Image (cartoon, rainbow, N blue to C red):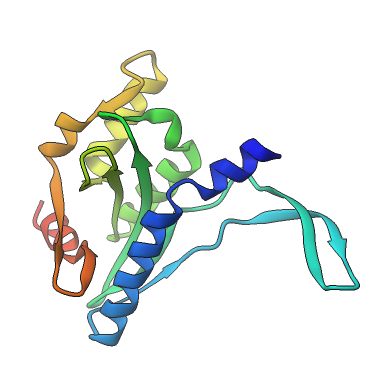
Length: 175
């Protein structure tokens, strides 16, 4: 259970920063973006207190965030890594499939990656991510180096927006 718990808590600081940014976007009338809860399967419930005491994370979900930016449907997944690359195993097949299908419906789909050792944030659209993922699945490189992300979209803090990712949407629209 401890490995499940740590897997579920990885990136929680990143997600909290994104959540705070999303609240600011909502207050400013710029976007409505919601965190999609990770589905769990309860195993034990303490009915006297009305709490789940043991649960397991379901394997399949969609992405971390979904919403609308000025009429544009947007979805993205948040990933965090300490090293100089993002391991492909951190990205799941159902997430790639969902983002790819979302983009085919004229939505904007991307991953937002935080390189914690470098304190840098990047975004990569599904059109660039999918070939890297497919290559890894067919025996190619099993991680995406930070240098590849440096050729993508850098995300900066701007004013109250801790992780100001709205420019990512505009840039991906332009590609």
